[in-house]
Every structure is written in C-alpha cells, then in structure tokens.
Image (cartoon, rainbow, N blue to C red; front, top):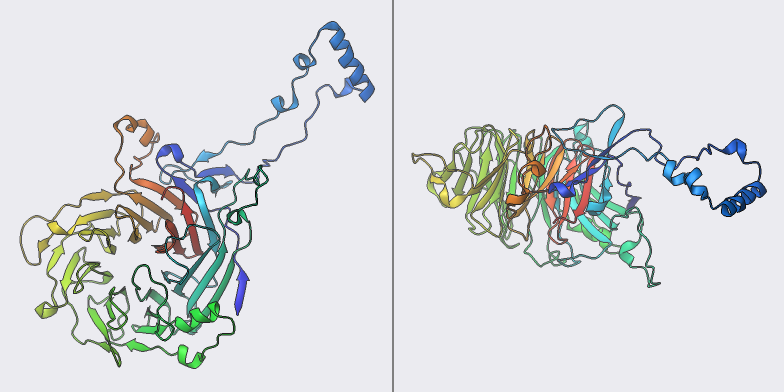
Length: 512
C-alpha cells in the first residue's frame, strides 16, 4: 500500500469571501517579526533593585500619586504588528517583500496536496460513505491523470485522501465546560493513499462513469469506469474498481496485468488530439461516452452486453476545435458542445446527418472553453470563454440551427476573471450556485440568487481605483498557479476540489 502524509496547507494559499464586509485575503510583509518584542524600560537607570521599586510604590501611595501616570503600562507603548490588508486581484499587486496569507476564519476546511507531475484534469469518485456528509474528518477519492515530462512516465492515478479535518484557527480553545473534545476539532495530518495505472502519453482530460445520486459504488461484481483522453489521440476506458477496492478492503489484491490494460480503446479520432469528453448519466447496462477533438469532430461510443462499440460517423457542425461536451441532464439523447469557433451547439443523437439542432452563435468574443449544464434547472447552461467572461444561458431562448435573427442574450454575464476561463461547474444540489476557475490563478464561487441591496450599492462594492465586486461573487480562493479544473464533491456539501500546475486544493467555505 502506498501511503504518505499530505503536505500541510501552503502559507501562500489565499481566500476571499464576498460581499466586501467579509473580505479575508490579506497580504503581509515577508520577514517582518510579528511576535512580541522585548520591552525596553525608559526608566531602567533609576530602578536599582526590587526593594527600591517596592519602596517607590509605597512612597507614591503616601503622596497620593499613581505610578501609572508616570510610567505608562508596557502594552500601551509596544509597537503593533504590521496591519494586514485585503488583497483584491486586478487592483493590488504583490511587492517583492510580500506574499499572500490565507485568512483561515472563512475556511471550514482547507488542505493542499502536492504531486510529482501536474494533473490538469480529474474527476470525483463516489464512495459508500453516504451523501450529505457534514462531520469531520472527511474522506475524498478522485481519479486523475498526469502530464509527465516523458510520455512513458504518465499514469492514471486513483487518490484517496482521508483524515481531512476542519481548519484549525488561531485562538481555538478546547471546551471550557470540560466536555469531551469533539473529534471534529482534532488536528491530525491527512493521509494520502493511491494506486496507479501506466498511461502512454499525457492525460488531457479524464472523466469517471456517472453514478445515480444517493448511491455508492457499483456492486462488487460490476466495474467502475474512467475514460482518459490521451495526447496520442486515443481515448482509453479503464476499470478503476480494483484500485479503489485495494485501498478499502484489507488484504485485497488484483491482477495488475488485467487492470493495467484498458477495457476498451477508442481509435475513432485517428491521431487528432482532444479535450472534450462526457459520460451520459444512464445505467451501467447502457453507457454512452462522447469525445470531441481539435479537428472539430465528435464521436459517440456506446456499451453493449459484450463490451463497447465506437460509432464511425462523427457529429460535424463545429468548424474548429471542440473544447468541451455536456450531456443534457433531462433529455437522454441531447447534448451540448462548445468550440474555438466561438459557438455553443445543441445536438440530438437521433437527428439525421449528425448536425446540431440549435446554436448560440456567437456565444463569446473568442474561444468558448468550457460549459456546464444545470442538473436541477435543465434549461440553464454555463459557458466560459477565452476572454475571461462567464455567461449563463436560457436554452429556451436559443434559435434553431440555420435560422436567422439576432443571437440570444445571456441571462447573466460576468467579467471578473482577467484571463481565460478554464473550468465551470454548477453546484450539484443548489441550482443558483456555481464554481469557476481561470488562468488568472483564481477559483471563484458564485450565487445567481444574490441581489444587490440598494443600501449597499456604491462605495462598498467598488474599491478605490478598482472595478465593481459583483454581488453574486461569494468567495475567491487564491494561491494556486495555473488552475485547470474545479469540481464540487457530490457527497460532501459545499466542498470544492481544484487542480493546478502545483497540485490539488480541497476546501470548504462558510459561504456555501
């Protein structure tokens, strides 16, 4: 078994809670000693001994004079530590002697995991520990793939991160009433366990087979699939169930030769690389996987009782690289896609000619990088663009493919991020909340249900010299470099996992 302690959260992690009254990201000077210094007594030459001090006190009492009026108390003359300042990206910049410091008071939980090679895509694996889990310590399992320096050093990895305790804040005390300490308050090192599969070529994107809500792992005799988009142009489907079981069941062993061989490989794309991929939310007896490549083609692979079958005819309405794909959560034959051609297309697999049935053209000013379909309000679709914009679309208003007329207007649009959006995802149980990440090293949490109070408008929402802070922006998590993907954990409410070039972050805030 491969086990090692997780690294402690980095001191350069940073979070911001919005609205502005809850801003928590601070910056401080590097190298400044914030501990209490030794007090220098200005009257040292006149105080010779303890006896003389006592006598002086007695004399003061006789004369009716208060010593504190002559010699101020030590705490009144100490220099306070440098004040922390709220950090707002786009408005503030860090100096050479400054670094970001997290405000732990807004995190319910925050952990950092470093990895040997960047993992630019991952997916959350469901487990048998139950839904709506709110107690600590928490346990999280994910599947991811590496971007190693050499093609033959890449892997598909299943990580299990356990003993994830809530954040210990300065000033936390044990129960003063003498009650037993809650196990939630224990401060122990998290544990990382992992199993890996050799993977030829870097993993551009990886997605796990979706499982029905309120269910755990499939029965023991059924596989749990994960698909990886390789930089070689191939899509591999793996059964990761044995890897999970080996970390859950003591003494469990598996045939590495069998597990290290893909259950199926999709060769439909030839040598064309790709990133777009999504499983349909259907039962294990009828799995469907969509994959899109940089040559604008989308292919469908389905499962049969005897295995997988890759269909040969592609979907071909896009004119540039397909960047992301999402199946409809309510219509089993409908899916959406976005592309570098600036469009979002809606498709029906039953349509003749393999052409899209509706489109948002253009959806963004530049490449549309990512989309997310709301699973609770199925007519809402999120999109994120290369220009840094995030838009929310009402699919009831989009036009049919080939029709004329003005393009639909998004029901909400945000331009807070200052670099390409790399990931967006709706909250699994709250239809107004979503998470986003960008190449500007930000992970942001949003709530469309928040409306700006007229009494709070104005200076409170616009820092001097800066841009407006949207009322819908709940939280901002900083500190990672080159953030690529963000996902909500479907079984632990409000828990967010993000991956970047420097590793993974797992956090839960008090805002969501």
